[in-house]
Structure formats: C-alpha cells, structure tokens
Length: 288
Image (cartoon, rainbow, N blue to C red; front, top):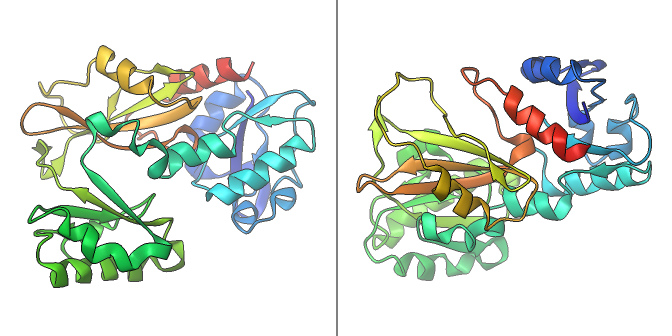
C-alpha cells in the first residue's frame, strides 16, 4: 500500500509500534516504506529516507504518522519529487488543514468566532481581547492548545479583564516555547454537551472530498446524542479542497453541531476503539 509511515526511532526497518496496527493493515496490500520521523523533524528529509525502499517513479505516497511541522512536509515532498514520486498531501494542502488559518474562513459557518494574532503582531493582543467584550475565550496557537492546564493556560473567563486574560495568554506562550506555531488564536468559548465531564466529540475523515462516517473520539458508552448528519458533513467537506483531512465536531448545548478544528488526515489519530481499515482503503484508492 502506498503509505509512508514512521519507523521505530533508531530502527529504520521496523515500524514505530504506535503505528503498528495501521501498518499491519497497509502491509497486507503491499510494501509500506518507512521514514525516520526524528530526522525529518530536524530538517534532514534525505536522511529520513536513507533506509527507505521507495516504490518506482510515478507513484503517489500518502504520509501517515506523527505530526510534522509544515516546513518538514515541504522538505519531504521535495525529496520525493527528486525521486519521481509525489506526496498525496503536498505542502500547500498540509498547511491549509494543519494550521488554523487555512480553513478558518471556509469552516466559519460551523465554528466559534476566532481572532488570529500572528507572532509578529502580539502587541495587538489587548485590542483583540477588547473585541470580545466580556465573553469567555479559549487560547491556542495555530495547531495546539494547553487544554490540560485549562485555568492556567487555556481558558479566559472574561475577555474584558485584560490583565487576567494576558496572564493566561503569556503562560500559554511560555509553555509552548519554541513550539509556538504561527501566533495566538482567541476563540469564543461555547457550551458543549458533555459526557463524563468532557465534551463529546466526533472525528470525520474526508478523503477525496468524501466525508467518511464520523466516530466518537472517546470510547464511552453509546448514547442517543445526534451524530453530525451526512448532508451537514458533505456541505462542510465541500468547502476545503484538500485530498485527505479531518473535521472534529461537537454538539452545542443549543443543539447545533459545531466544528472544533480541522486537521491533516495523515497526522490525525484514529483511537483504539475504531477500526482504521476503511480510512486506509479510501486513501489507497486516491493513490492508485
């Protein structure tokens, strides 16, 4: 199967065990080339592929593995191009779905109001906060949040309390450090339906413009919560012209389904309680 997956660190011919389940499915359809994710992250795409048995020129490969910074995908695409190969999700498509600004306008009808403050414009943070009045906000960068430190580095109860809000933002930036991606995103907090103290979320993979059936991201008991419908998923999916990406949905307390975020399909996880075979088969069809 024309997937490109990460090897175990230091063992270039062995699949990273975190991806062993999907590798076994893919390998049943043919050889699966492996790359060194650490070397790719370090900017050495040629070294990342040094031990890789790649398919013949003309093939299309879909990356499936750990998150990579956009510049790493650009280097990987270039290294493969030099060997006559093409990456299914190229640098532009990867940036579109991996970084928040790429799909922000397209998915706005189903998303919380969001204001972006790029790294070079952080002196605008106070003005950006003022635009939300006294609403509650969530802080993240263009890829990640610090939701595990909710009160300390993620949640702003009142945007009008500028000093307290900036403490949360500054703590978030401190924790992100060199991994801060793009800038600060201020998103209006929305009350979501919860189960066991956490918002109920569904992930939907979109392959070749077709949304696959969504699945619960948690493995809690089945309930009667309404799943995002096929027409809704298709309408949202049609706004983003990427070959392989994901939408994460939740249910607002008022009954509306909302998109929490989009992501690149190659680096979006499939939880253990979900069989990834149908996703991998759909990706295979795109690469043939």
